[in-house]
Image (tube, rainbow, N blue to C red; front, side, top):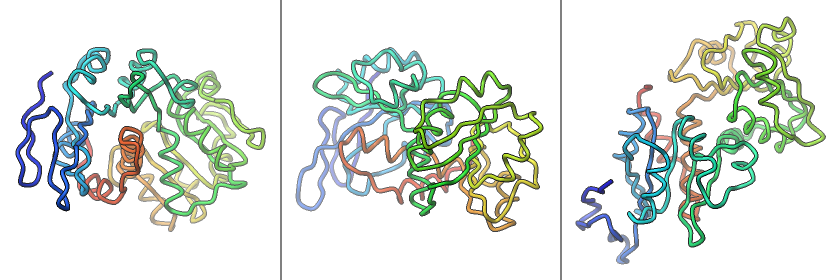
Length: 291
């Protein structure tokens, strides 16, 4: 994997140990790889320029995750971000160290290069916490419904529990899948796992303060939408039919690009060891068409 020539500001640099001119100071620029299958997103990230010039996002060729990881250190990458669930699962077990979330869920979406080796993080759950926190949504005592199953659902459920949510309902394609997606949570959070076909599902949705559709193919009855509800819809459309219903009744809503922006900011923060401004990423992704 050979990096192209990079151009930043008024200076021309090769990929090894690049720098750029900012505020009369030469600042090292970190190269962060991005690997995913949403080509609209990948192309947008390739065009993105950090306002502070600290990093450059470099698309990685689709291939075995093990090969991608083995190339990070020799090519002087600061880290890599995985934007597809298949890559997240493949990276687990190939690194030297893991965060608690990555270890418990068994997935990695962020890899940082450190002196002691490669460190894996998983920000799928924290991205929801960041998204809701930015909107001043208070989870204390709330009831949440997650539609879907898998590692991402487990991570989001853990995050909601840490935010003080009193009840988390996981509705999956079938009950065993929902049960496998239920993580260890705080004692103050009760968890209910069931199939989306369960007759009780409509009641859970009607009582929910927060609905997160992780599985884009999950169906939600229109009558579940109310002005009290907060909706996070991870379908690829900017405004899905479900989100439009929520907007029509005045509910607080977020789409996939909102979620991805928060997740990218968290991942970059881990790689750089410093916070990354969210607004430029939000602006970029809001202008990025769905896959």
